Length: 293
Image (cartoon, rainbow, N blue to C red):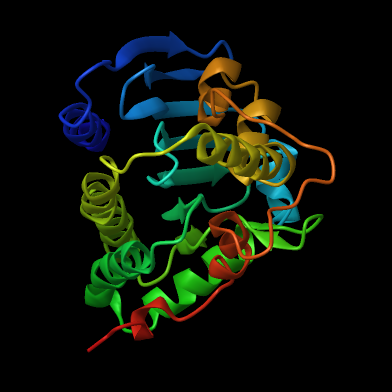
C-alpha cells in the first residue's frame, strides 16, 4: 500500500487537471483492495493503480496451468498493478505490477512465489526513451546478480507477445513469475526493487514528451495501436484471467483498458510514414547497446 501511495502521489504531481479517485472494496469470497483511478486529465487520459489482497479455498485454473499439483489449494494473493494511458500519443503507455502468492494444501508444505515487472508501449518511436527505460530496469536488477536483467528482459519479450498478430506489445522491460529463489528475503527484496524502479523509469519519459504537439491523425493512430493492448489483456494476460476466474472485482481488473480504442479493418500505415516505423521499432533488441558511449 505504501508503494501504491508513492506511485499515485508522484503521478498526481504531474497531472494538473484530474485527480485520482479512490474506492475501497471487499471480495465476497475473501479479501479486498483499494482501487485508484484517474481520468480525463490533460496528461493522463486514463490510469489506474490498484492494491489487492485476496484469498480463497481454491486456486483458479490460470494459477495452476503451470502447476497442476496445486489444483485445489487454498491461496492468498497480494499485489499492486497499474496502467497509465497518456492523452498525448508521443507519451508511451506504461504498465507495472508486483505480486505475491502463497498456496496451501493439506499434506504439502506451503508454496510461495513472487512475480512482477514493468513494460513500455510506445506509439511513436523515440530511441532514447527506450534506452532509459531499459537502463533503469538493469540498474534495479544489478544488486541481485548480473544474470537477472537479461533473464527478466527475455521473459518480458516472450510474455508480451500477441501470437495471433505475430507482434510484440511494446519494447518490453522486465517480467518474472513463480520466483522463489535464494530464500524469501532475497526474493522479496528483488520484487521491491522492481516496484521501486517504475517511477524513475517512466517519469523522465513523460516529462520529455508531454509537451509535444500532436494532431487528430496521430491520436487516431494511438487509438488503433491501443487495440493491440486490449487484445493482449483479454486474451493472454495471466493477471486478468486470474482476477476474472477467481471472482475478483471486474471494475478493478478491467481498469487497465484504455478509454478510447479503435479497430480499423485491414488498415495499414502509409509506407515511409512515422506510423509505419513502430512495427520494426518494437522488435526485441539489446537496448543497452544503443548509444552506450
